[in-house]
Amino acid sequence: MSEAVPLLPSPRPSPSPSPSPSPSPSPRGRLARWLISGPPLVYLLIFFAIPSLIMVFASFRYAGDYGGLEPIFDAAGKLNLTIESYTRFASDFIYTAIFLKSLMYALITTFCCLIMAYPVAILIARSAKKYRDLLILLVILPFWSNFLIRVYAWMIILGPQSGLTRALNYVLGLVGVQPVTLLFTAFSVIVGLVYVHLPFMVLPLYANLEKHDPALLDAAQDLGASAWQRFWRITFPLSLPGVYAGAALVFIPALGIFAVSDILGGTGGMMIGNVIKQQFLETRDWPFGSVLSIVLTVAALAVAGVAMLASRPRRQG
Image 1 (cartoon, helix red, strand yellow):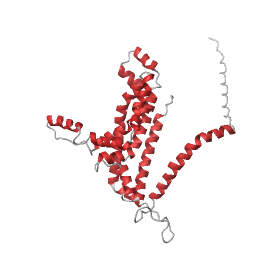
Image 2 (image 1 turned 45 degrees about the vertical axis):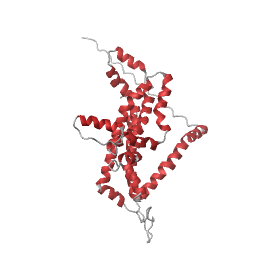
Image 3 (image 1 turned 120 degrees about the vertical axis):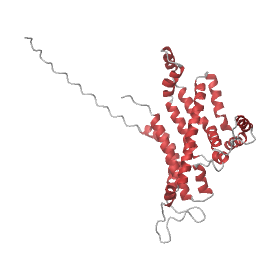
Image 4 (image 1 turned 60 degrees about the vertical axis):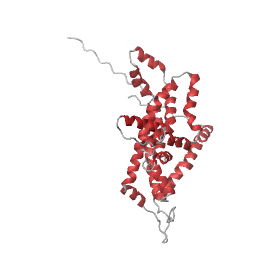
């Protein structure tokens, strides 16, 4: 009979040291924080928060007979507020359809910018350092000229007498297809949106791709990964924060812009920004224009929030 082995008491885990409280910032540190964060907060308060509150308040008021807004209080001294503009937006599907069309234009623009900007950003990030500044300068070079002049130039490029349209219709004629019109169509609006917003996708992508460690690609190549596998499994996942930032910078302004669709789209390419401008400047229905602006702002904030959450680094469990 074997001798029983006495069980030794298991050692008690040593209590983990409690985290020491972070030291409170000194008065100079608090002053430095306020000096750094104060100007952006004041800027957002003056140019975003207060105008947004005014817009929300205007959306519940009646439109004036000759433009503007009715008085806040009626003749009896009661608040003169209504939800009529919100009811009109919810009941009239044409505004929802224009908003959805603008959403589709913005999505197509963002996708086209991503497809076109990614090779450019990789080319700049992997070029010699002495050429990078020149390539970045070429990307931002269109900003040196007037925005409207650049958009009007596309009226000449896409016009019915342009070489591009004639060449396209000549090719279509060879295969028996009727001639097409490029200007004042959805195609011309998307071309203009892509042209205007392409640099906003290139710059965040380049800023991200420049930080990648080339040793990762060399190691993957030594392990037998092909060029596509190295891109899809290493470069692209690491560049997702730049993709999300560029997508937000392109999608949000493309959703609310009105100048490009006004010049290149004609009546058929109207976007939600054109309707908002029409309500404020032509129809003079400020409450309904405020409702459309609120819907546009909520959509832009939702996209920005999704991009911010998606760009956060994932923690390993």
